[in-house]
Image (cartoon, rainbow, N blue to C red):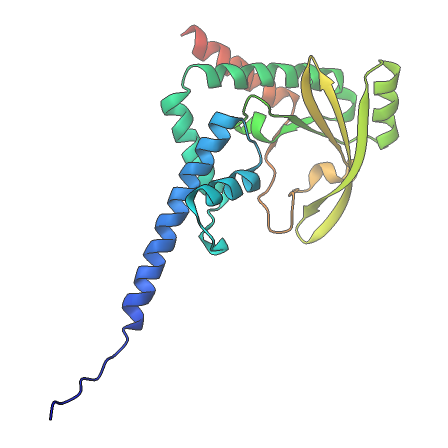
Length: 221
């Protein structure tokens, strides 16, 4: 009579295989999402992740990379394949942003988003934060100058606290611009797009001017 063999399941090995698979898939999705953003002009990280996951047949949501992982891949992709045209695109968008900020100086403007970070694609919006005494002051300013715009409401977060913000969309020198109009008291607090989101880096007029000066120096050297 043959002796039966007892089969044991190696949970540790199985878990290691699953972890390695998820890590590999995260890296592949991050690279694919970065390529989509660079080649298709997509600026929405969530949209790029979903498209990349579909392309790769990924169904596990915990395999999706963080935005920071995609940013690293996107910078690497552009340095390799778009080293000539992309810096010129970003510099031009920053020049338009600076011009708009100078015009809106009375509302304490700050540049934020992909134009500031240098990740902006060809269809990127210029994101400006404003801190007027009243959102109506900004609307009156635009109406007086014959600048067409649309408005909607949104939320931004400081810690766990939601803050109401008015979003004004318009075109400046043919470039789409989104003005996030905050309460003036919010100028000194740290803002995020969501509770779990990253802190929104921003730069005022003098800082953007310094960035542009640095770009001109690099180009001439």
